[in-house]
Image 1: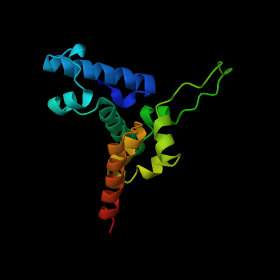
Image 2: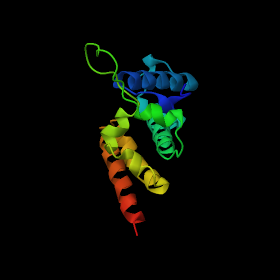
Image 3: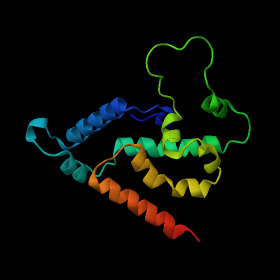
Image 4: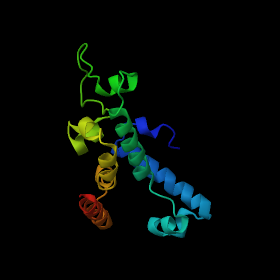
Length: 155
């Protein structure tokens, strides 16, 4: 279901569709129906499966760090930095690009920050939760715990 997810350009609509599909699969695993009226949190506790959006964000974060650390002029790095400039722009909002999520979270200097592998990994947990847009109360607690762990790891 998540093959090649590192290269996806995630939107809210795609994320919602993936979560719905994941919940349907979890219900099927447990032999439940929608009419059983069991909450998603209870199903998640029984299956112990991680959230698909969080998994995809983590994979994308890892891939972004890998691409930023490439030394030679490979096509992956060139495509990441490519800006289309030919012809007339079509009407409407710009299409979402792969790097837009990372730039929104980390800023335009993400490639410099990703050069330090250990620092990039340490900052991942809290930023991934922020990146996927969790607004539940426990997510803010997790983000704070991630920041506290980052501060504890500093010399």
